[in-house]
Length: 304
Image 1 (cartoon, rainbow, N blue to C red):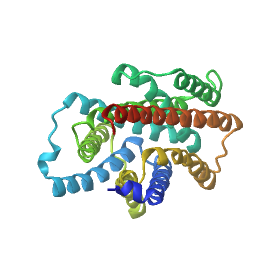
Image 2 (cartoon, rainbow, N blue to C red):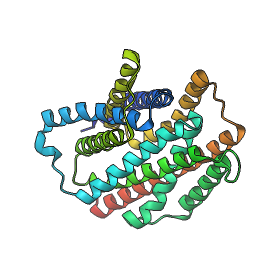
Image 3 (cartoon, rainbow, N blue to C red):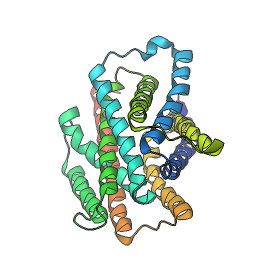
Image 4 (cartoon, helix red, strand yellow):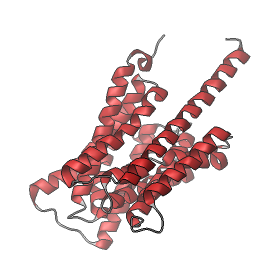
């Protein structure tokens, strides 16, 4: 019997594109809010108003016992990496153009390839190593170490990408025994606690009127909606079909950055971006190729 992901691939792609649009909206809201509020306070609202509906949904549908943690070390790594990654990204967009920060945060496939060797024990062939090396060339073209364009914002964006890679690796490890909804609920709850404590130490900046309150709450609710769209898209379409569309977020980010902040990426950002996108797509293709080859080998061995 065919699954939903085979029956409705175009619907899955639409959901994924909606997820990208909401991600850009969250980034734009964060960039607007960090102009008036500390990054830690914006992150607190982001995590709190994702955690509340997510925990409510998990407990109502799966029961409170679902939130029980058994693999403490793996949860700690995944949660810490996610909190640091998002924190660095929000800091980056406060310092550099939105398109540049988004682009640098999307070099995570390069770090995933590197981390998969010691953590997952995977063997990486010459094609993926070549893609990794070319990806770093693209990064160097964008950040230009030793020049005025190399600053804390670009370093934070690269750091966010490294954190995202760690999250991806540990999600693979955790998903073998844990539910994705549980992992996300724990992560967002801990993020709210961490940045709540940070605000308590750093100090609270009172929101200026109902409009700013609305923006702060919306950034969290949009985060919850984005995660729902992301998860739902893979129910209706295969990951290999959806993945190439992920890089459209760079176009959306550039358009939003230009429209609201008159940000125009410099030529080196475009050149480096094209190299990074090509390397990312190459890594995705090789990953899909090896997975398909392994599946075909298994079927042949089983006589299917």
